[in-house]
Image 1 (cartoon, rainbow, N blue to C red):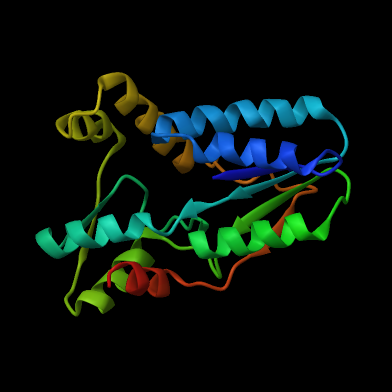
Image 2 (spheres, one colour):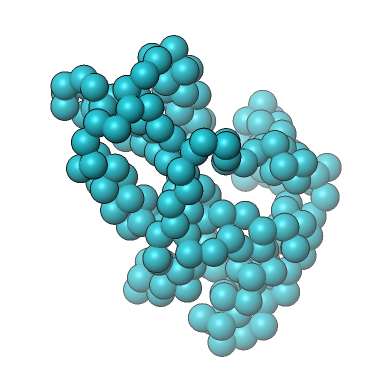
Length: 198
C-alpha cells in the first residue's frame, strides 16, 4: 500500500493524499488510487516523497483460518519464491518517521518486514501457531480465474488477480529498487498472526 506525501507543500496536501488512499472501499479502488498517485508523483517533480509497502501480513489471518479448516494452504505463488511482507504496525511507524523527518527532496521509501517470506515459510508459521501440520498446495495460474469467480468475484476482476500472480512469478511485481531507500520493520509474521488472532 503506497503512502504518499508532498514534502514541500502544506500539511493539508499531505493529509489529502493520505485521505484519498484511506477512502478506498475495495482492493480495486486502492490499486486504482495508488496508480493515480504514482502518476502524480512522477509528474510532480522534486520535493515529493513516497513510501511503498510490501504485501501486508494481515492477509495471513485469512490464510490461517482457511488452513485451520482444511489442513492445507493453497498458493498461486511457487512455494520457494520469497516475497516481502510487512505489518500495518510497521507501515504506520515507518511512514510516521518519514513524515517527521521533514522535507528531504524527492525520495522513495520501500517498506518491508524483518525478512522476506516464501509460501513454505508461511505454512510453517501457521503450522506452529495451530499446532498441526499444514500442507502447502501449489495451484497453477489457470486455476486463478475459476477459483476467484467461485467466490462471487467477477471474471474481469479475477483476470486482474491472475495477471498479478503472473507478474509476481515473473518478477515484474516488485519494488523499484535503484535509488529507493529500503526500510525494514521489526514485526514478524508470527507476531502479526498472534496479535490479530486473539
